[in-house]
Amino acid sequence: MTPNSSFEGTPSADPERSIVPTSSGPSWRQEATHRITRGGAEGFGVFDPATQLIKVLSGARIAKARKKGVPDRIAQLFDELLSAGGIIEEEDCYRLKTDTDWMRPSPAGCLVVNQSINGWDAWRAQDGAALQTLRSAATPTLDC
Image (cartoon, rainbow, N blue to C red; front, top):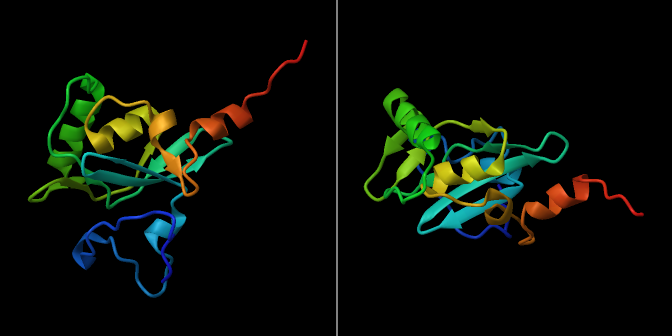
């Protein structure tokens, strides 16, 4: 296994949490196109420029403390995932146990960092470029 060396930091390697890949499949980190970090939280995601959808991959470290500004719908979804076992509590964080699909990167990032966030700026590619650059590239411009 050769992880994406541009993404620094590694979630805890606990085979019971399906974070470490098996020898028959690729690393979940190798799938990732983008990463978000803040205050000890860390998540990896796969962004599809054609649909503008982002999948937050299982294994994300979710910040323990909820900051002001978390939309009610995200807080409610967090609580639902926690109750259903899609998020588990660990000593210093929560851990996402299942991939989650999002129509926009800001709510996806909000779930991971547990605070209101501009996902277009916070999700970063391996080269450090903000997700916003893909959004801008996909939007046609009109020259007059």
